[in-house]
Length: 355
Image (tube, rainbow, N blue to C red):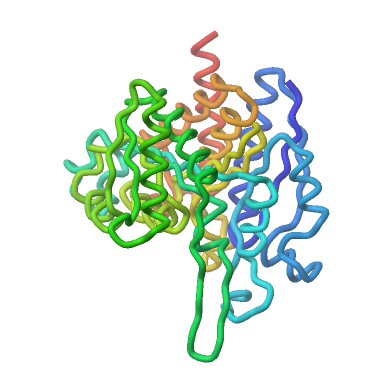
């Protein structure tokens, strides 16, 4: 197959981890007879510095005309003034809206070797295999905002159609897993959450084999820490999802190992590790590339339909986590490049074993 992949390295450690992910994708393509063409474009802080805006039109054009988008990270202290008219995160929010990627998928499995790095007791992490589906283009992040004197307003708005489409995606994913869907809201207080709950119940009723449980967001935050293995697919709105997925990432031992996929109605998706730009370690060659590499695996699966190749990358990463030297955030001394090379070596071994 042939695919055009737009790469947005972004800021901080973004260029380092995306380079590792691209190296893996190039090797996957070479070994399996696929032609992957890569083009790099600006987003975030570096785009502001270069052309005065966080999401240039050239970047938008490249993304909408590609088969998939791989993103590193945006932001950093240089652009951290929340009062600034132009900020790096505006580029990311704008790109999500422009691509129409309304469902953010964040899978979470706890690797046994990393369980000791989690703040939770290891016995509470056995069997944890979660998939968060976060609504990505509605809610408070995209509502109207205003400020007058000593009053500030952030509108949280959801339509039935917005809730329907993300819940349908969650149901489809749940059907391919254990069939258990948990919907998180704040229906005892918020009108948007009451709409969310009513719509979710109606949609889930259409999916045979999918069971539904409701949780309030505050209790869900506690349950993620006390019995995370009790959950399968968790669907929620934008703000709640942002908070809960970062909390859940701590279960895995490091933000550096967690990938994400942002999907819309078609195959074009936006793929990125969930960590930030980590400016304190940028340029040192010690950033963990695993989250970016696993995001590349999600790209292979969801945008390119290459399930076998995606699975091969995930198996190779598991093998590296089993026994290879890891980066500093995971207690090791390996560099970004060395971890990527370990994944490439595992891909070679697996292919040779299969032959």
